[in-house]
Image 1 (spheres, rainbow, N blue to C red):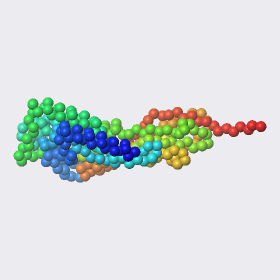
Image 2 (cartoon, helix red, strand yellow):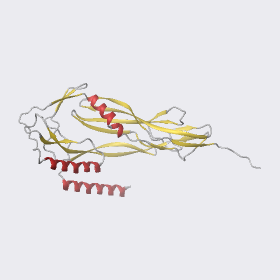
Image 3 (cartoon, rainbow, N blue to C red):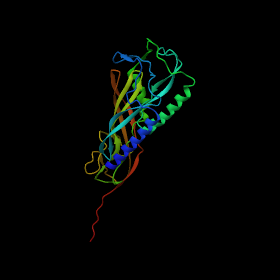
Image 4 (cartoon, rainbow, N blue to C red):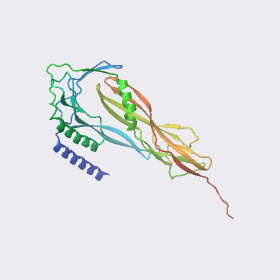
Length: 296
């Protein structure tokens, strides 16, 4: 495993050198000009222009989050990078600037793939270059008053949870070794799954943090109900934690789903979320009987 880690670091370093040679990077948290937050819970009033004029177009900032990824039931701690790309945007009728319509920077949604962040960076630079001939760079107004935006943190986070996160939650995959079950003996399910994942959302009130937690449920046959929840992904025999005993031979259709709940925080407010699930397709499991024969 060590040679692979070294190679990965070398490739990451090479990519970073290529990126630095193309566009200057600002490895600092995304910033908004003249921003501030008042209030707690319920409705948050945010004073923010939502843009800045000093970031390099296409510049990338980064942070990390730690996730527990399960493979065949074993937990592996993995540090996941999160990237943000400064992208150009034409600002119209913003009292913070004296020369609108003008060109400023805003930050992208969080991206977990460096390749995707790099592609967005290239696009951001091209867009900036195409717009600079038509719009001046935004000039902050001396003594200007930031525009006021009123947001409901719970509503913002709930919309992000239902519209975006539902498409980004990991889907578990499972098997029941050795691919069949024997009557009277426990069949053990083992899954490759993730039971914890953190999401971030850039909002007018700041960055929302959403910590999602998954639990597994198993339906051992199409005619049965769901059993669970299970907080782990199961282990193979003999240490398995998700098992079932079939009494008759034949075939069973086994289904798996992972239900998701989350805690969130934004601008001093916090709460919980739920109602989402991910599921792979069902699998057919042959069930054989154990028989004994007497030979004379």
